[in-house]
Image (cartoon, rainbow, N blue to C red):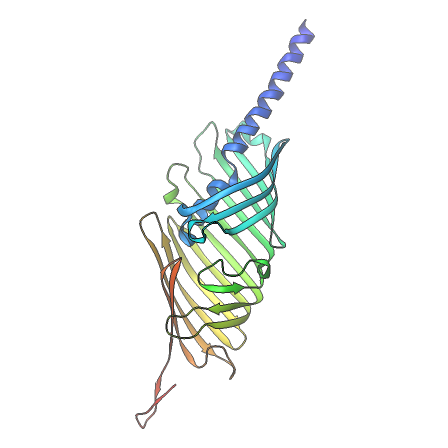
Length: 291
């Protein structure tokens, strides 16, 4: 009888662990909340939708064949997607009263890793999300999905770190760093001129996240013929969307996509952006203007 009771106790504990693990992963599946909060400032995350295909439960986690992220502005077309997603729970974190999740996925020929620490379970805590992107080939990204340009290519790598209070996501904080190499931005729609294509060797974007505001502290573009630098901010919430970026460019070759010197002002909102290019005009001693 004692042996039978011990067996029931151990069996009950195992079942309890599986049930708790399944509930935690289901309710805190990282992409659902992560995508809305992380992309709130960049793409108005409150208007994004997430669909999940092919969920399979395992121990101690789950796998998903595909996760599709949509936006109401695209009218049913995917904004981007992840494939071959795996999510695992760190069982020992439960003894600390929190939940830690790790996830990996494939995205456009590259890898995405997401690690979420300190998800509240028994005790109050502030989750921290670490995201790492490696060798994503943006030439595989469909054309015409983003409003700022027709297409983009290059190899993307970068990282995000976000702290997100569960009850006050508008108070999130964090930082990010993105690097895109050896590609081109195709057919940028400008307000006061023709569409332009900018091939580049290196693009670096760095900044911080403060609530619904993304402060871009550094934009650096090493183009085939131009050097472009700037900064600005992107803000978004349920009531307002705002983009305010200012870049300065200079041609370092005669056949540069942007000749001479000037400024690039990006304003409006994320899905109706105005890109205006103003070339610097020099006045000669004789009083004539020279571009």
